[in-house]
Amino acid sequence: TAGAGVFSALERPSEAAAQRRWNRTLTDFSRLFNISLPELRAFLRSYEAAMAAGIRAEALRPRWDFPGAFYFVATVVSTIGFGMTTPATVAGKVFLIIYGLFGCAGTILFFNLFLERIISLLAFIMKTCRERQLRRSGLLPPNFRRGSAISNVGSLPGWKPSVYHVMLILGIFAIMLSCCASAMYTAVEGWNYIDSLYYCFVTFSTIGFGDLVSSQNAVYQNQGLYRFGNFMFILMGVCCIYSLFNVISIVIKQVLNWVLKKFGCRCCSKCHKSSARLGRRNAITPGARLRRHNLSMETDGQYDSDTEGRRLSGEMISMRELTASNKVSLAILQKQLSETANGYPRNVCINTRQNGFSAGVGALAIMNNRLAETSDSR
Image (cartoon, rainbow, N blue to C red):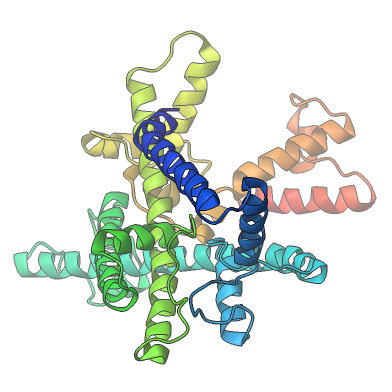
């Protein structure tokens, strides 16, 4: 609501002024060339249809040759969707639905894998720098092996990678990448630098308004080099901004949980329990560094201690560790579902069922045996 109000206040006067200028121009043109306004509007609608099909008055690159189609496919799977090229045939629209379904899903998977790898790389770099700093200060224990930063991220005593450091590094890299790309677009496309920065953010964040689109002219100086650089900038920018948005969302969630904990609603016990559960599961909250040790000692114990400690200390964890930490909760949920399906109450004596699971028959028996193995291993 606030964003809509601000944009309406900023852009509505300009839109109204442009509409008045256009109506005045249209009326003057109709009088000058003795063309009725309905005929003139019909001609303009035909021109808009031609623009939607990719026809322009200037000399632009072909839309559906192989390079143009490759550019279109890249905007589809990355969800940028500039809109300067759209399929016009029924077969093309049907294929776009099928291709976009799998292409967008594959791209999101690629972004998630990139996010996991880049966070692991940043954690390794930060830990290596921290280890070198401690070696120079003589604070490392004598039995600490060199190179253990590669084998075990949590082996350095008193250190864990912070989500705030990751956000800062990704933010600096995104700014540097946008500045370099904007310099290239200003020199090649002829845009001013602010428009180039605006285009970089709209494209890298996959908003894709389509008012500015790069690499659309028919001929460029050093055309092959420019198109390759344009592709690499967009690829790295989208991956970087996607990772940055994910990290910022984690920080926003932490701040909101801290605010709710600070000024949390006391209206009912349900809200209080929900906010307490969320606060314990999430990462670091502002001002909680001094309470980190106490929080880690109060962890339930049904989760893995290292992974839960990472959640409470603000460091990033990989998807593999997150999945492993939730296996116990999944097993408990499956146990409760199994008990409900077999009609056993939750307070049945443990002697009546081995490991707390009933035998069952068929597929249910296989599930119960698997749950029993999980319970024993845990």
